[in-house]
Image (cartoon, rainbow, N blue to C red; front, side):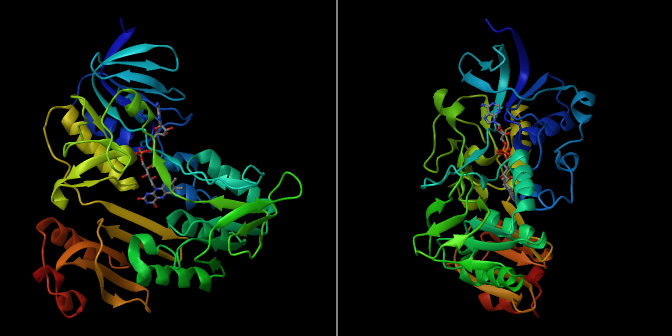
Length: 409
Ligand SMILES: Cc1cc2nc3c(=O)[nH]c(=O)nc-3n(C[C@H](O)[C@H](O)[C@H](O)COP(=O)(O)OP(=O)(O)OC[C@H]3O[C@@H](n4cnc5c(N)ncnc54)[C@H](O)[C@@H]3O)c2cc1C
């Protein structure tokens, strides 16, 4: 017998769960809402952790998904520092780390992701950091105060953003990655090369086509990183950005179906294999109607936000598919920003000029625009969204030709 019951139970203290809570109230939900999150802070946005917050330019308060008074004002119960230990989807109960057992009408799982840790000799030396939460960002900032040289491991957006932020803070940064060119796995060589050149112009040394062998230190602290290629990289601090793994522990224990991409299997309405239990954000592996039913699992802030909102509508019984084209942004210090809609691959078609730092790349596969990335031309993304939704096959020379109005394609 549960100790008490709520109408809507939201598990996970990130942007997906918080956006769901907000949207539930915006849609007029009158029932009780309980949000349970493991971290000590109310739900916050993680993007500033590698950008303004890391550089000391913005505060914790600035990163909160909703202002601190919102929870009470909107009658949403927020339990921080509380984990959901197990959930029984059939019996509609959850056991919390506080030992309380709570019954629920419908639930959302939004347990996010954990960083992928690298196994290497010396991996437990002081000064080696991963980045997911406020505390990690604080620890990096405190550590680099004493450091002159920092090594970043990983050539994706965490590695490049942190390299840019720490360089802007006056540190000498070296970025080590398996890829030949930064960001190439997500955006291809041409765009990756643009961002790598930008980093190098600002003094970041980039070591590509190599990977971590071991860390070294004569005492407790890291003093260098030795890549497989053998060239020792001296440093006082290391930040690893080697990807994340969806946190599906709770879902797995509850017997929910998991997908091929390691996430929680959902339909196009984000409902899991258990009726009345939805999933959102980094863990949700869903059927995307805007991608012809392809199964996607995406680790982007805006996708988590939008999932939370779709899930809210479905918790209220609206029966809607998730129809947003996934959107991603990344800032390389204040040197440049990119925005992306997709995901997709294909031949890059460039509109504008990489040399001038203002361009849009449309990725075209079999005549179809599947994705687009822009630097400085946000308006082009609205057209890209339309092409993706409609399965449009605009002529590639028209996409590239700045004299052709995209609205007419
Ligand atoms: C440093 C950094 C920079 C980023 N920058 C960008 C960017 O520029 N652009 C972009 O699009 N994306 C960015 N992202 C990715 C983006 O932040 C994530 O996609 C987003 O946070 C996912 O939200 P979520 O709510 O699904 O999960 P999370 O934010 O991971 O939140 C899940 C929460 O659930 C909690 N939890 C887990 N299990 C339980 C449980 N059993 N009980 C209770 N609570 C639990 C976790 O502790 C966590 O607080 C960045 C991420 C990081 C780490």
